[in-house]
Amino acid sequence: MEFDLCVIGAGPAGIAGAMRAIDLGKRVALIDGSPLGGVGIFDGALSSKTLWHLAMDYARACRSDRGYDGSKLCPNWPAVRAEVAAACREAQSLLARQLAAVAERGQLELIRGRATFVGPEAVVVGERTVRAERFLIAVGSMPKVPGSIRVDGERVLTSDHIERVSTLPRRLAVIGAGVVGCEYATIFALLGQTEVELFDRQPRILPFEDEDVSAVVAGRFAEIGVHVHRQARVESVAVIADEVEIGWKDADGSVQTARYDRVLVATGRAPATGSLGLERAGVTVDASGSIVVVSGTRTTAPNIWAAGDVTADLMLANLADLEARHAVEEMYGIDPPPLVYEAQSAIYFLSPEVAAVGLNEQMAKAKGIHYRAAIVSNALNRRNLAMRATTGFVKLLARHDGRLLGLRVVGPQAGTAIQGVALLIGQGGTLDAVDRCVHPHPAVTEGVLEAARLLLGTSLFKPDAMDGQCRVVTSE
Image (cartoon, rainbow, N blue to C red; front, top):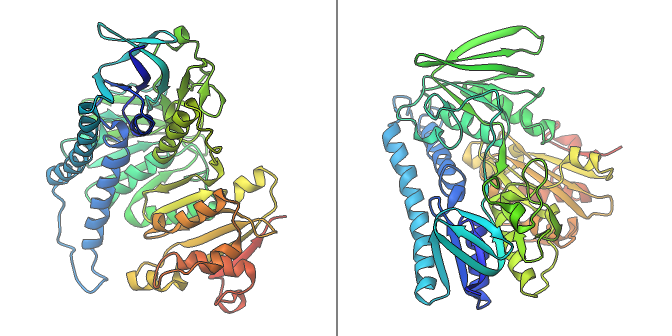
């Protein structure tokens, strides 16, 4: 056989799987026709987060309540785009350098093009047939667009296009109030040149999070000028000259119309499996196009595994990396420990930042799990006081026996505060372990410590003295 392993897709999952196979001494083919790094770098994880950081920096610099007055600043959109492109090039060059090094040693061949299965042991890429003993499918996902909306890439956009607009739109409509929609609404609102309207079919944004989390973000949206149309059902999107007209029914059923410079369709993502010819390899997909896994990350074909967005679980770059490593170890007999999906973590790049790991209250209730939750306001944390940014809170969930269930942090540097709890959840850790850990001072993680101590009855802050800024909630 030409290769021990053929990895299809060079995004977060594909790169991780290829490198792990090389660790094990395998000869690897890595096939991809998209820019190296995929949405882990371009039009996704890195590019949008770079844009978010730049927008946050600009908004902070424009403030006049921090001992200086930056109200006369103005963003330079071409320069902002250039900075985003520079970050992406730097990340891609790191990957290219790594792949070139292992290719020079004869461990890997990077094959540019689209792969299509012709059987369970071979794919074609252009005119070439690539044969391997095992395959890892890691082609990621693509924007999912309702059939009634025609995306033209110029006026009606997805996340594949929005970062490349030549000028900042004067009026931007965002259809979809999930993470992607809310992140781009945050970015363009913070840059201060765009009126942003967000169309949400649900009664509140971020419906997969607890109401207190979405309430803080919705309150901040109101402050930065994002108008949310709640329970709005979009019925038409039409390009008219240089504008896009949206027609929708509001919560009362009344028909409304408005026009915008650009419309971003952010209604989710779908696995990019359509052109792989999976049926010829014996790989089963479900109605959504997600690859069915029968054991761990193994598909219905005994020599083919899948990782990342192509499977029916959370679409997160960190999870894609873990799944790919797990798949390669499984296929080569290392017998890795099971993936602990309950310990998966995520950051929502909003204003304020939100970080999540494990269960929230509504998830715990849906699973019938009895819990206790401690909520500690950022106004009690000295790092937040020093940052002059006290909006938000820490919420820690645990079972009644003290085993950790989940954590939500809302506020600056939220993403830095969840790793310890993620590790402990994966190990079956308890509140006592959080309490015994020495936390740096001052740091946002001290909010997690105080939440644990609140549930243990040993917190520095007592609820009856803090006017609602810290409290304990017990499930029914």
